[in-house]
Amino acid sequence: MYWMQNPGLTPKGERRDFINPDWIPWTDWLMPGTYFKLFFCDLVSGNFTMLLKVDPGIKAAVHWHLHNTEAFIIEGGFYYDEGDDKGYAGYYTCESAGAIHEPFVSPDGAIMLAISHGPIGGYTDDGQLVVMADARLHYLMARENGAVEHTTLVDYKHGSI
Image 1 (spheres, rainbow, N blue to C red):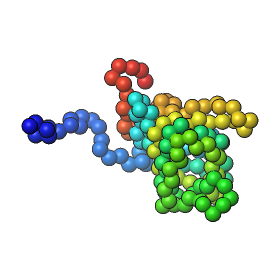
Image 2: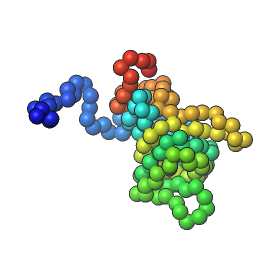
Image 3: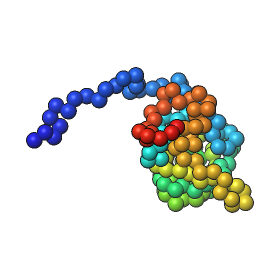
Image 4: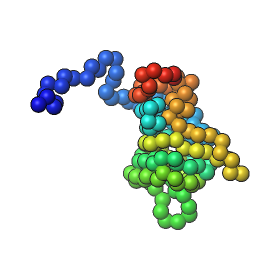
């Protein structure tokens, strides 16, 4: 008979409930012409949420989604092949776990909100796996750039950063 009776409130401390993305500097991402702002990073589950900006004309390296990655396009667009199935501002996509593809950005570039439920493996042109872009890598890259002050971080109680 105690379920949710007077549960109290979660202490807020110094944490902000809302942030303005303009407060976060862009951090160089994994390929030339790509940048990110890390909003959420869960080092326990591997999930991370970021704003991803891609310069016009960039062709991404072939990469493998080990888990689902969701994207909502805010500006510009991207696509996977020359067909008529292309994403533009206001479009949503889910890059399914197991997908291996090579996106192309529109001539206007792209800015998207990306929610990754796990790592992304990046390949060289000759098919060699060269990076496993997980939550920890994104956190370390943003931290090195001084861009984690407003990132919501979930970490192990006993562990390292």
